[in-house]
Image 1 (tube, rainbow, N blue to C red):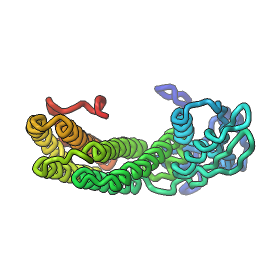
Image 2: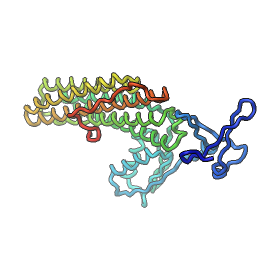
Image 3: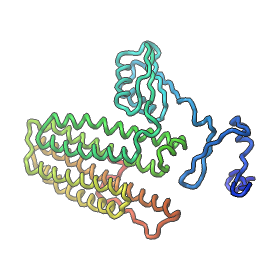
Image 4: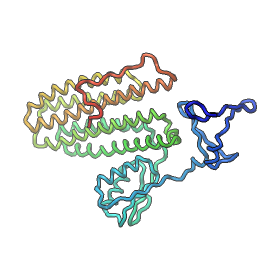
Length: 368
């Protein structure tokens, strides 16, 4: 029978003393080549619904995709294309060129495999390279990925400030190289969520709901952007090699950096604990840091030109990092409310209020 909303309904029937059964739509059974005696698999979802699969669906062949690229393709463009293919979730990816693959193209493909979590070179020929994702469905839980990214990002920021203060090019270079580790974890998160959105079986293997997947994807993106600003601070080290920065200004920036890392730590903890009060404290403290940044900027502009530029550049990245921590706090509040709805089955009265963005803050969509 048809139910409101266009769904096809089936009434529950009782057979024997304690068994409940429903019939399956004939068209669904026949189009999948099923017959009496075939096995169906099902997964229970957090919203109370059931998802049915045929037995053969669990034994599906690995998905394979072939892409043809030109040897003249820009290196960065090729790498970005391969990242997009990786995020799309193909198990086997064949990269082909119309003629013999050039050394540069092959180098980019190999570099891509080294930077990603999962892809390994399965086979090579004169015109192609085949990559296989050797990682299982859920090799690393997404909450653990976020924890790992957090530890890496906060360490990068601390080391970037050390490199700037001590004008240490080796530490600065190390920070820039570690950015790849954060990127690969972010791309891995994107891939896991993309596949989960497409395939309920993968979502079940993650042990998360769709809102939780999206929450961790948002958090991953925020952490990746904070890592980028750590790299920007490290890059300023080259500017001040021959132009020492006054110790007083360096100490002011180090104090601001420590405060920004503290906000990040609190924001991440509230994401997992559901502490909305702690998240709101992060938002309030970010407002104060924005005001402090304006005062420091006025002082920095009184310095000689090259010093002023270096100080302002570092100050901007520290402020942006604080603002991203506030974004993470907002994500934590939203996640806490979502969990309350799931746990209670209804909106919780007097839920937390989301603080309006400060007038001087940079909107999330405009941050870089």
